[in-house]
Image (cartoon, rainbow, N blue to C red; front, side, top):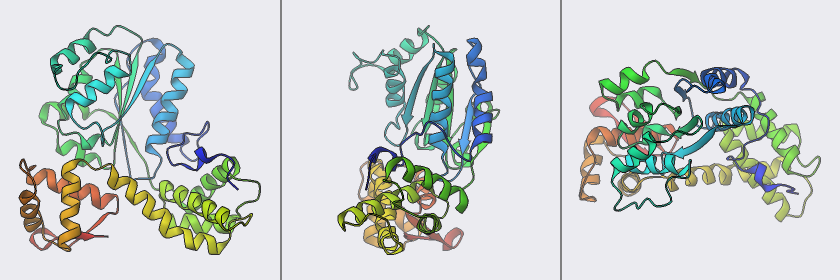
Length: 333
């Protein structure tokens, strides 16, 4: 049934995108100075998970590179590269200047000096999940580089700016803001229909089944694609040549759980410990949760950082927060 497994992955970047023309146009305008050999404006993309933020950023920057020719680009996932050193390393890697960098012994100042000496073509750096950065000062490091343009991706802009000092806030307060909304049901059905057309045999799934998947995904394209992929695998195992309503119903829990697990696997060490505390403790108030977390680590993060972690988990529908202030509690979803 599956003819091209790549297109059934949420990370797949299609050659054409749907339902995000306005967002593509705004980002393209922000980066347009690059065509004339000048750095683009810093762009801040924000909105819920599964709304196409990463896909649109990569699509737009890729299209710009095709048009310009002489341009470099690099994608940095700040879930994985969340320290100042790791981000600088990845940025240098994108221009081939990190081969002899030793993560344990090379001073950070040397990485900065290498970037300052970069005199190649304009360079666009996409920083995804940028609110995950442990030290936002790296954004200022990159901001000061004359031929580096940044595209910042986050879920909530207020959480990103809450981590910045006044200097950073003043620099990035004038960024081009591009807000993404959740996909509507019809938009999700259209996206899924294209994925099915590219990745499945003809007539493998009908509109009724795609609408059922879209409804279960509640506006999240990652979840929708995950359910479709699981449904295709299930139908193949059962030896049938089309995805039925029953197969979709059976695939919804697996599709959602798969996306959930991928998110958990991206956690930093401290986020994983905090999540495990919730697994063991059940519904817990913030103060008690913080104390339990501190018992498991030698170098605990601040209460503010832990609140940010919990907010991130809430956004990704991994935990549920109930109540306000002192009466607030957190529990696994």
